[in-house]
Length: 486
Image (cartoon, rainbow, N blue to C red; front, side, top):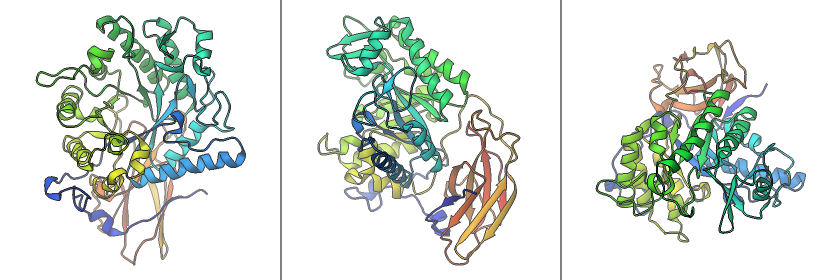
């Protein structure tokens, strides 16, 4: 029997750590930061870029040995992200008219092997999903929509040969034409292929807009309708196949000019025809990740606009971890800390671009997030569309104690446990030295999205009796009442 093993259990002190923003942060004044308790539900995401192997992979899979090394590299990266409290991986899956999985529509991307069209001898998307789920993290397939790469690169060439009217050249790059009706159908089929064949938790649409160099065009209602048509068709195909899959997008960080703050000519609505706030209001998009890669008055008023128009539960702010790098804009860490603090105080999630700048602890960002922002676990927010029926709690729980570990096993109360249809059940584990466990307190949460019906909780310190609560959770994020064990 495969046992889900929770390592590095920190004992009862884990549940009583206060989240103090700003304490002992290099370069930060603790008095400048306010205390905001960590919530039970919060999107904590990273964009994991495969284009050119920027985040992963750094190793090409050309032999069995190099394939193993490439997979181990991903596992180490996911371990680090899990350590930092990240619960959502936005994995670049369609890169530039090329993919990291075997597709009937497009070729293999070169990031896996160094050669366009060459198989790495394993399914990288399937492997990544399994590894994320082992760690209690969601995986959303990040789909780059409109750009299709260099004009004479294999992915773009293949599309030009099959659909010559669908691809437009701008400079030396190829782009799908939003004005061609077949573009929406084609992209919807790409997304449907992913959701039909893989246990992804979301489809994340990137660059779902007109290119900024689109010739001779003002972005008006017609252009916005063209992009909306693509979003709507993708939404329809995804939800028809698996309604629990989250559809999200990453629009330009400034939706439009505000009454008091200019977008300085770079915004989603009037510059590139992304009517992203309408998509949320119309139910075409479940979650929105605006790319707020700015500071000061270029960040906060526009964040508040997204929150006001879309609702805080639907927003996760894209934060520019890369701007901390001396090779980029060399921002001080305090800028990102204040943005994180604002997100939490307003009840919105966040996503770091990119993963490597976060895990490399650039200017201490990983240490701050791990030790102060994410000292306790968090679940991703439940969906507001689809099923709202809470699952039944697990039953017949058995607790076995040894000198250094506790073993929990249980039976599912669900009548279904089918991996493909969304009815399979996940489990959350809570623990406390007290018999009364408040499952609304995230400091009690020690394991999330457990996909099997047993867990080993190791390194129990001393002989303090630890009490447990277990809940069931469906694919929409609906959580059952708890069953208590002591």
